[in-house]
Image 1 (cartoon, helix red, strand yellow):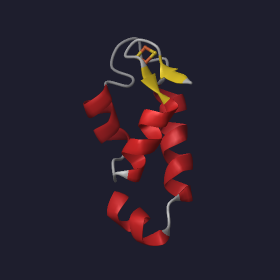
Image 2: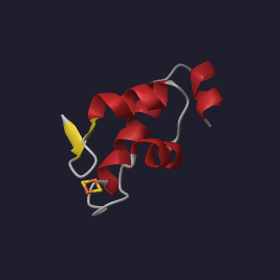
Image 3: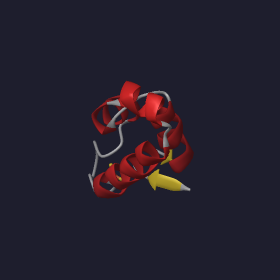
Length: 64
Ligand code: FES
């Protein structure tokens, strides 16, 4: 599912970025989420929080 239509960023791309240790700011910079019309920003932040909370403790420490 697309989260950001302006930059064609999917939910899966955000999940993969979080798993790689990225926070919202890094995802915004790398993928462009929220950098055009901005209407996807809150949804993307919520997904980052959701995916971060699902990471095992050692991966969470690396993502912080
Ligand atoms: S929908 Fe993401 S910046 Fe417009």
